[in-house]
Image 1: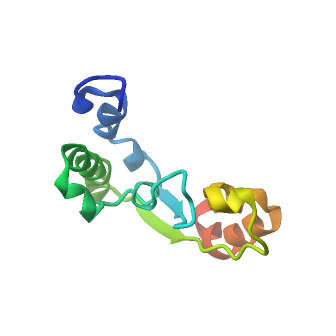
Image 2: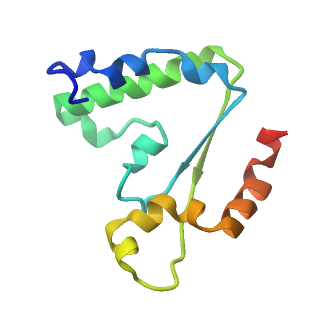
Length: 124
């Protein structure tokens, strides 16, 4: 949102005004509180109640509403998954939150199990 001095004129804000998600049959969101790269509320496209105190926070919450509003009038199914990883040891990636960010993609077995158990019906 730093591409314009007025955040509401930024590319990402304007993109939030487009009804793109409503073109899908299903929207699957995967988030982990162990992810330090993408804020949990952002990954889930949900309002962060702590954001009400700042102008930027209010703008971010507006973007959430912009993204979700078109889904109310569509047949799109919105599904949110929370992932909690059990890392066998503490590594640098675990400490900086990268492991929580790419954990599902780093393990073919975990990704296969996740898709088979939770997402399969959305892809058939």
